[in-house]
Image: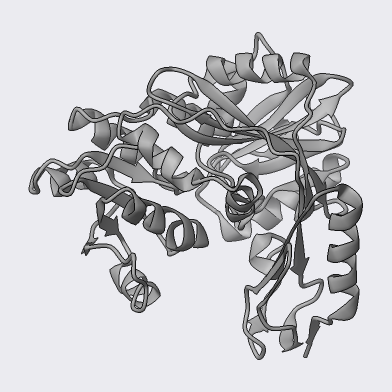
Length: 398
């Protein structure tokens, strides 16, 4: 691995996340790199890293959503060795800043296509046509032509299933659009056909040499309609080769290459139908699970690609894994929940403290805790996870 005493990586971030705090910051330390963090929330990051041995060397305030502000801030400093972000919202800003500084980075047109759901559908129209229509803030959904029901409504630049809902008929569509606009009055929405089938993910790392390494993927269980809250994910490393080839072609059409990518799709026979592409590592502690599952420095590999290095070819794992998300079904106060626990093959982390008030959002912000389980076979994994879940209680009530 590349190491040098003076190596510096600039991170762009919004709010603190487990992926950065527990993954990428320690990885930078293992590579011998210092981190300068640019963020619009410097105080929150300073609090998050107060007791962390791998805290950034500097935390600088910056309007990181503005690529021009990012470039201006970096141009006043010594040239870093890499510009990196794990935020869905900042991929294009990081790509443009890296390009301006002449550093390895993602293609900004690819980060834009993957973030913007309408651009993604247009880029894939020849490989996988899906009905999709944009709905501006003042557009009347009743005037859309060709909508196929059921359909899905979502923000064009949204992430993490926030305000992603299914509509089963024209009246339902009007109601769902009205509801989303109460929270996002100025945002463009996308209305597209509902793709039915088992939900899967593909996890990849592209390196500087142009190779796309496939780690494998998860099969995902989501909540009942109309929302799409991820409830459970089971590791699946055995996607059919024909499915993988089709996914590679679709990612290539989007321009996905360098760095980590998390792709969500439904499988109809062996035909993958893309739901969305998150051009960063999988989140919600699935990335921490993958590092444990492969027993490999996964976060270091991702940073290496942004430093212009080739990522190692991952050795296949014979182990199995599952992640469970415990989430609130009603609003109220979290009255009872188990503490953090670590046992052989099992890791539970609370995501809210007892006494916290829960206001339902129908997204992963409703998560109360996350359970990561790894074992030698699916039977062992399921037995361990099910025993933990049945032995503990999460009580949310007024």
